[in-house]
Length: 315
Picture 1 (cartoon, one colour):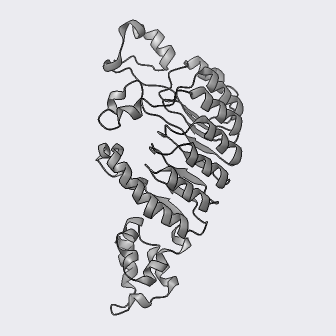
Picture 2: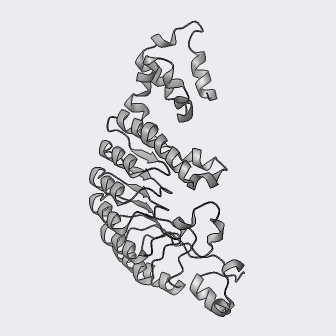
Picture 3: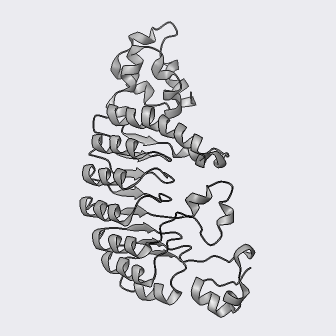
């Protein structure tokens, strides 16, 4: 229990029967606890506590990102065993419980490695969902994201980074059905230097990275006109796709193109000229590692600077 929670319990007489506390008082206490403390036995103390944990006001936001970011054992994230365990965990307990207990008031979901089943279950019960982050969910496909598009019209932020089974078709459907979408994060892993992921992410998943960058760009440009923030790291879109996004998303303020190698700095300038609200562009500024460096292709630094928009030629 954190310090704030401890201070709260000190306000209650030592000999008080916690099971007899009113629902309102229990909810107030539980609202001061982090998610981990609520789920590590607190709700199983007694029936009144379980009922308090199910109060909709305690289940409006589900954010599991800190628990993924804090672990150092990233290798196990991508193992089939871990995927089955996390799927069962979020499917059978956390995500399903939040979706059911929120009584339709769940507005933010941030999880990883979830499944279509979990996503469909949550989407159908969360019509007020505004933020959805399911990055690194290799089991989520168009089935899950289609359910989101059909059931969550109030969506404002979507992160489907590293979700290789999600196609441009479901992106188009989300754009059509979610007119208030302001933030889209569709990042991929570094395909130029896959060695940084080897041993952590399975090779078959790395090799399955979607190749239709321009199709996704066309869907974004056509159906997401109100985007303000767009991330496309290591996307395979070309200058044509970039132009489609620029034409269709005039309100863009932030554009992340880091690692996109299929267009030049001149293409970026030409495509973003009409984006009057644009405040920041992350250009594909990176270096070619020795492991993938080919002298015959990148021997001339001027050509490299033109292609990869970098000021320093480092190998």
